[in-house]
Image 1 (cartoon, rainbow, N blue to C red):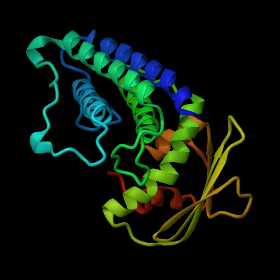
Image 2 (cartoon, rainbow, N blue to C red; image 1 turned 90 degrees about the vertical axis):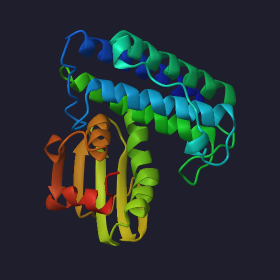
Image 3 (spheres, rainbow, N blue to C red; image 1 turned 135 degrees about the horizontal axis):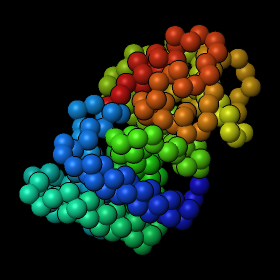
Image 4 (cartoon, helix red, strand yellow; image 1 turned 45 degrees about the vertical axis):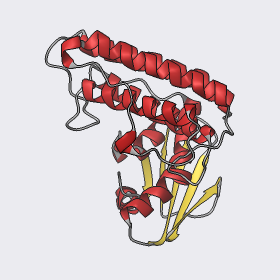
Length: 256
């Protein structure tokens, strides 16, 4: 999926997130909890995502190639509780629209700081579209049954989780070396499959590999992505092989 294709999807996910938040607030006090984010309410979710969007807008706007010093960083804060939920939801919506416009302006190849080896504006759009889609799912889960991730976003999320998030999380959390565990995640609503080998400190993606694996998990692209983001349990997927090894994924790839 290209940068230009991700921007309208980002806008759509932001609008859908905003609707889910307003629906949650329409229920009145207390503010609903977010089942998939233990300890968080919908308000916490909105403040988190709106703050991230403003932080990244600053990085893009200033073309920062190093992380900003938090001590000197001053960003517009979220409305307080006294301002009411509508003000907070409007604040989120404004930030998301401004960030989408910045992504359009800078394109995919502007050099900027990221936490990844890829130091481009395109990295941030890919990352934030996935995070926004997952948090939209979170927000919807606060009041009912959440809708699945868009198939294109979900496929991107599975690939990104393996190629980018898995190596990063293993480094951040000093995970134990891999011992040759080989996983396959197979999409049942499309042709894609992802075979992943853990070898020492390496996470090796073998796209479409037909070779034997220790465990295979099959499901829709959305369910695969949500499993890797720890939103749905292994029972959501059809698992064959060493079923106990599927939960071991989160030992090899520790959550942040």
